[in-house]
Image 1 (cartoon, one colour):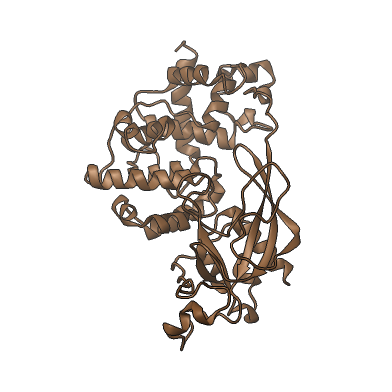
Image 2: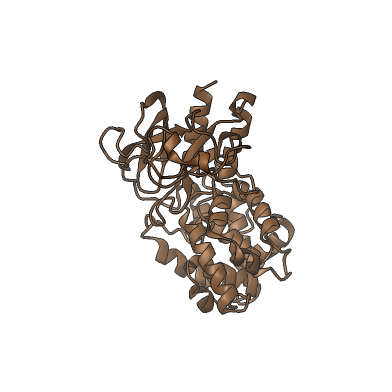
Length: 405
């Protein structure tokens, strides 16, 4: 570190002591942090904003206040509670890491970056962040905010992602041996509040005298990002299947076990059983936090309606999540392939658009009533919000329900 930049940690920490953001997972400057809360927040914050994570973090820590409590939760409970946060592999890795800490480490997180890195699902960034913030280990923590600050501070103009090794090496030169966790959070806060992607507030920055991009007069140019490639477009169909009125719900009062047998219901194989209606989990969650909940769209006349839900395959996109049935997601125009029931389907004029990391998806909406084939569960429409549908399927449910109004 040259003489000029040797003052960067002191300047930044002085600024942080007066300007640190107050966040529910964060300890005050110089105070010990809870490794569980640090780890949970870092996983939630990947690809998700602080504003979106904050209420969900409070829900999680109220329901599962310790790593042991989280490790004891079922996969279904975890995935339902994660609904709406996206990138569902994070939730699956969360469960694996929680159980590893609870069962293999006596409920205590490893206190080193290397030990944390050995936990299932913890990547280099998360391990470094927890090691620095929770345990005070000198670790180089580089998220998107830190990446931007360092690229400007050192005027690194190699386009991303090729610039990342140089950015990390530069960050290493200014990371202090003491208060490493506070320094990491200070860099994050500086990027989030001062060194922003657009219109950075350079005159308020404690590092402006050290910043090469500020000296050059064009900090907003950095970091340079490589041109994005056009994402592939895929199509498919979501099926909204309602229970026929002549098939009573297995949970309705007065319905005997014999009355549930398929011999009384057209379309069922004799001797088979009408699929059961599952009771919703007690925690109510919604797929789209910035839109009105689905419950608001349910009228008194809708109380008896039930919708067929399935579990997605454990591996792949939205793996293990409860969902509306869909056909394949392909490049061609949508069709009624893999419909969950042999019935007359009405295709709505509305479609649902959703973006995944590597492709954009447009889904047609097909509505029908019938007896389903395959595994699944009838879910009360009035409690659909409690099903924990991922954002994609919450959008679809909302679109169908709004089309009925």
